[in-house]
Length: 141
Length: 404
Image 1: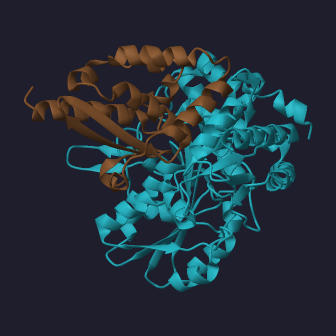
Image 2: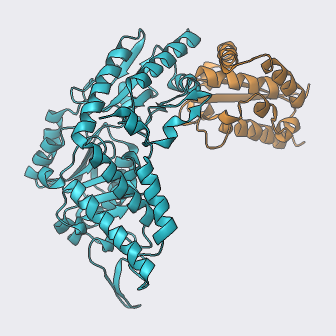
Image 3: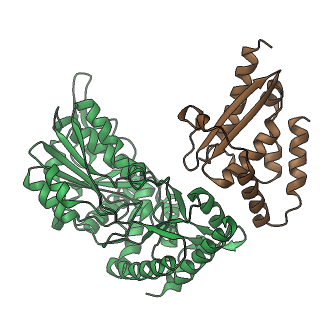
């Protein structure tokens, strides 16, 4: 599935929620379900610094496919991170570099991703794309 | 004081946030603005806008008169000796930078010591660190106890003839602690040190008299006292300001310019290059009239009552821990909820229509000392009510429910 298709799947999931509380309860649940990063990757090197919540991100590249793992000290942030990882993992570098991630806007989480919102998520998306660029360059694609 | 009549002066308080009536409890970050301030600024642009101190034309005279009258209002409000002691800046941060550069370059030398406290906002830490790098001087730090109060014994032992400047907050933005500034000033003066007080959090909550305090420098911002953003005041004793070199330069602050030599304008203009924030100053004057119309003693009394009510209500919530329990506290309640991250709590509280601040409050050292990533902070001002506190309590309970 492409990022766009996975994003569409997520949008459909969120369309079931009538009010903000259900949506956030779901995000909290997703945050708690997030497969956590290895302890060895929960270090300053993998830290994406935001003003309020911290996010750690690591990436693996194998057979032309990137997989991400992440963690955050805030649960709602982790929920959003979970969605990002679901859409962006198991993708090729090109797919990650080029997809505009429109689904985030459609599920009403854009506010968490504006550049001025200091929670590290914007930096996380940027970092994911940087990983993709680096892997692409390294593999000489 | 009639709370309904006060609230009716703040148009923004009648709006909704997330489809709920707004409860604004982020006054430590900035206060809302009463109609008289909004109208004063609007009136300035509608009727007298012109550049000051320059034109001989009628409007320029009107603008200059209004601008300088505002400076006198500030002078009287803070109890300064003359308008020469009232320097207009962009805000507290710029005031502190002015002091660090001007006083710092002239009077701080290698090995000299500057004292701040663990409670300080980054704006009262970083300019001193940069000064210490430039001058090879040393930054000393007053520790705080577990209640968030300055350890005054430790402060005294830091003081020596090497101490050139003590710069501390009047009130802590993160915890609400009211520091014993009169005692700090007296003790610092005994070793010949000068004292700067960061008054950003205090100016709207207690009456200031710089002369009685005998403080050397005092900084504050208009936007935390019901005035506009982008304007603040740097008070300095005239004898000190006279000895201090200019910091930023340009027009207005000069006397005579040739390519060989420039002589500088007299105080306060020496420190005010460029076109000043005229509408900001007129707005600030109006915010002072607002404060005086209520009376700072009355304001303090009302806010203290609400602080007591809020502290009682929040303390009763299981799993809520108040951070900062100083004996002398301003109307700030900083707290943590169970093990819920402040960002998570803040997100839910916001959706309940209640505006609070979450995070480290630009005071990372004190958060590190307590060993927490940040807090949730409710800061109370004159238009807040018991109903606002009740709405906060409701939002906190909802948050706990969602993260249970």
